[in-house]
Image 1: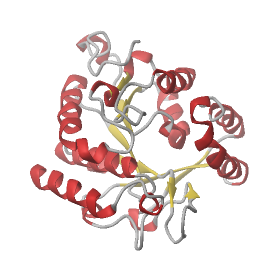
Image 2: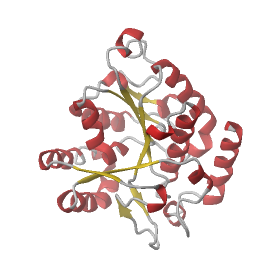
Image 3: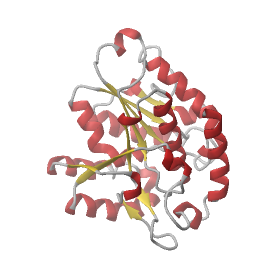
Image 4: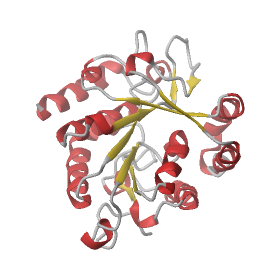
Length: 273
């Protein structure tokens, strides 16, 4: 399947890269994380920019590839105008299991650096928010911010929120609830025509029907009554802080312990200093 290899000679040839004056990289943890930035991906495409999409886990619990999840995201992204050759399933290449990205920071980092140099760098970088909702989301944020810092584009690195349990108990969460601690909000309104398209897109993840049974009502509410795309800046200092006070959603759900996440993250950051 095109796009499943980390490096594609066709996609990354010097002539093809030079065709666009600007290019952006969106770093996701899982296939379907793109739902948080549908509008921004489309904005880039409509601005005649080249968009690269990167997934950092395989999307499955063992690290084995998940062709069905890949195909779902490919279908949606291609409808938005992303070229299939510019979509990379790094997590499948490296056999990184869903839920364990923080344990694979070093190999993911090396592969990210290789890709960066093959792309010749990017102008803008988009990462999942530092919000404590899912441990893989926070690990992807960590890698993206480290990459931006390494290559001097922190000011052009943007984070977008998905879901967080900040201020709530148990398995309760909020969708698209940016944390003020992550910096000022950059808010754009999504046109109604695009909102209807995006609502159709989120029905195109049948392999994740259980997840979307919980997410869809909140997604629908947001699109009907707010209809906004929210981005925030990133900060190296935030990586040394918990995403928010109290227990994190992924801890409360029994997915991962914050103390274990912090140990892996701290070791990774020390190696980058």
